[in-house]
Length: 296
Image 1 (cartoon, rainbow, N blue to C red):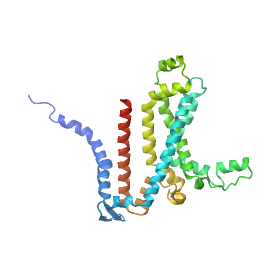
Image 2 (cartoon, rainbow, N blue to C red):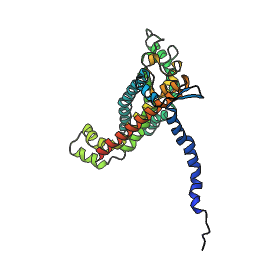
Image 3 (tube, helix red, strand yellow):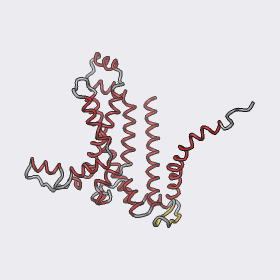
């Protein structure tokens, strides 16, 4: 007896077709094309010359690229040392049942994370403006001897970037820590307290081991996100194409953008993108291996 549904094996592919088309069009093909483009040198949108691995060899001797790597690594280290402790501290504070208005403060600290980096850059650009910025005008009002033209953005490039990112991301990571803290078994904390453990000992020997998986995820998110930083320096230092004074705000992605769309060498920019991709993939694999070793 013949089946009443002769085309049943094709049914799943009909439903998968939109996803496969989008995946091929917006991910697979651009990925392959960028790999091919990384082996070419471009002169405008239509003139290309095959150069093989020359772009990758040029990166190794490019001082501007290593300046961008150094700035990005410094920003990443500062973000780790500032964002993670601040987010964890906020979570520990707002996880206490004796704090009034906890829900309001949680919302207040989390709400900046719903805006984009470009919007944050505009806000902090206005705050740190020389004469009309809120920081200089407030300091000049409190301290009349204060110079209202003090260049905060120009003199404190990394502090401006890290402070802007902290305001945006601390509340976001705080929510992760709050979820982890609320899953710490109360029995373990009570047992440690009965044994005479103080607040620091309970945190170090009970709370921290319990939230370590979430901490590992946050560290991974901070590092990978920091190495992809683009919008914030580009908007905050738009007068120098995001590189800042003396290239102190130049990041890897900003340099990639400047190379591809201002210099016009899309091949070299693609090579920079692949170097960054391989680094992030390699870091993620190493991080996964280390976290698995901790769990075992």
